[in-house]
Image (cartoon, rainbow, N blue to C red; front, side, top):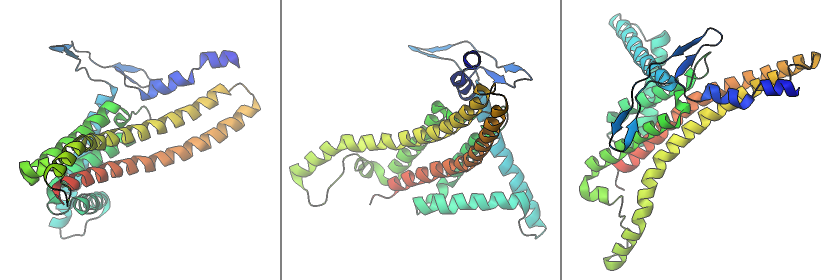
Length: 287
């Protein structure tokens, strides 16, 4: 038993399948080594723009989003040209798009929310595909990388602040940093506005931080649980007949968690799109 545990390091196996890498592992078929570029030096900052496993799957997720919309749009155009009701794949995508646009984006942003629908739809479908790609054989979930979720959250932060500034104007936008409290005037109002400004600034940063960590944590945790349960099969693989029982029970548990991960993949895309819409809506309406 000890020899088997020494040969199999479950923790190393889990990290190998969830962490980013310079290779695409298609075990037992082989590996694809991704190209490595020279470092780029920008003053004291050193960057390496070489593609990694998560970059490849991010590009794949983006391509899948494009193909989904392109094929659905083409099918809908043909169906409407023939004066037929939407059906099949195109109908499903149209229903999902309308749900995200009307019930997530416009419902939470309010008046003028339709102009943010392309962004929210792009975030929803990109995150959805990114989540699902981690559940296929040899796949990887780029949304399980904190750098990816952080970049998505940063995009939302910039959208929230820039759109809020354009809608509210300079004076109205400063009011979101230096709040005015009804009933307070003069020195008291100034003191309270200045005292509350650090909290207001912190709240602007906490929102995207929560978006990034929530998505990263949920996607990473699911893969950790699945791979850890798989490791149980190998750890107890030398128990003879008992190992069959352990393998069957573990397989049933893993199947259940995989089905749960499908729900989580859709749910996390929904939550990210929903909260992004809420944050944009909060800045769009001064009251």
